[in-house]
View (cartoon, rainbow, N blue to C red):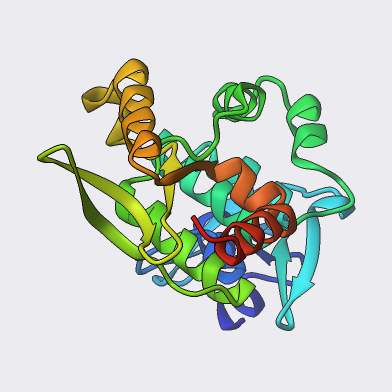
Length: 237
């Protein structure tokens, strides 16, 4: 708040500092980023950006004037790499943060702004979340299981099938249920689509039920996923 007050009456927290306040990006920068229309000289701990923000790009959060989540994501696209930007988008999605003026609207409003093309391609691809690492996606899934009140599975557990050990993402042994988390980065280069399906088939022949859950399903329709898992866990394998 002090950095905003020191930067003049029109100043708002922005870019990486705004993203940190919203909880969608962990900025370790020593200087606080603000956007203001005035020409007040910033202090050594403030990085001031000059510009006039429209009313729908500014709000107040925790008592601090700050760019909206959509505007913050638009600004982040100009200063973060693709990987960092994707993580910020995912965090905003997980936290269900949104604004009356959507990110898509801002992208259309600023088609030539730096980073806009990257943002547009991320939203259009429908593949947001596929580059999560295995540990990240498992952590998200376990948190989801806890919120849904389900029994925690074993993770990275092995099942022996015909003398062959098969590693499974999440396993409920008594219920003979396996959940494979699709989309994390380590799947693509090491395991082909065909091999994954052959593996699933071998597990099912041995009496295991295999369910594949994607990042999108986990966070776009959590109630449905929780309901389906609850039914499966209540039904003997």
